[in-house]
Image (cartoon, rainbow, N blue to C red; front, side, top):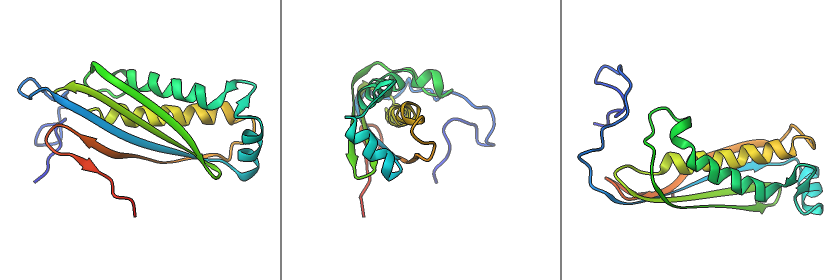
Length: 160
């Protein structure tokens, strides 16, 4: 039976998990978020080369995503601070939607899923912030773990 690791058996006493007995392994995670634009906003952005008065939307969002990855343990109370080996944030357009893929790696005793999810989320929020002058009808959606490797079990989302 699966149990929560950040609380005791009664669901109380929140704590950071003790990973001192775990083995250091290569850990990777891939998370994704999507930002859906109204069609007219997507066209305006595309026609402008994704430049707004605030700057280069996709480039700034990539940098923000990396910064989010690095700040995860400061934002999520029970996350361990990690020494990261790498982080890559890629943003592509699929029709009226920005697709953000954040991949993170480290050698450690705990995984980097939260870092990847935070990076994808912060990049999506940055896109929203940089484009909100055009519309507040953007939708951030489908923030999810796509895959992870290392640790007790690997995971790979199978797209239907």
